[in-house]
Picture 1 (cartoon, rainbow, N blue to C red):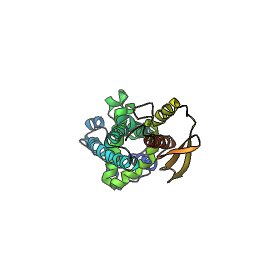
Picture 2: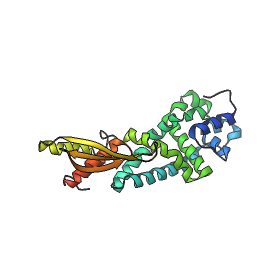
Picture 3: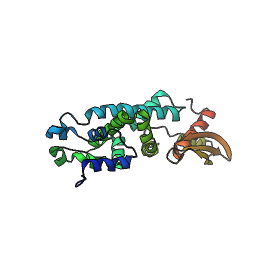
Picture 4: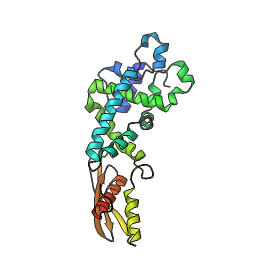
Length: 240
């Protein structure tokens, strides 16, 4: 817990960390007030962050939905819904909260503090949602989108793992041609576009020196998977 600083200094420090300056500082402060603190301090009665958390959850879902809709065009509704549920979740938001050390700026009640509330994933995730709700009210949807976009790559890298529930197209392609004893695959990066924090990578997959599929993604691993998927479709191994 940050001490020996005024609340104004603490909020300014956080603004510098997140790269956004609130016009209405009271919104930022409210986003960082847990209900346990509100219950113990009369001046904060009914001024905790739960309503902002509710709003932030909805705004974040829209931010991620728009991103997935635009960047995963070949994917159907089922895939997009599944992917979004893994982005818009406690685990994901808790990690972002840790990135900005949001717990350090949170006002917690004594009881919650004693029981380790500052390190609870649920409280950290709720604080992040409340922060985004406050940002939405202060600067609109584009403000939240601008804040989230630089974080997307790291969040996707955390979950875009073939060992988990996504289809591992690369393994399917390898196994299919292994049966035919044609296993000389190579993935080659063709180009990359965009700013450093929001790049798109384009990858080709070669079988015996012949290009058999192309794909793009927000990281190289994702682009390889999409290239393998394209090859599988062309070889009529899968139908998506």
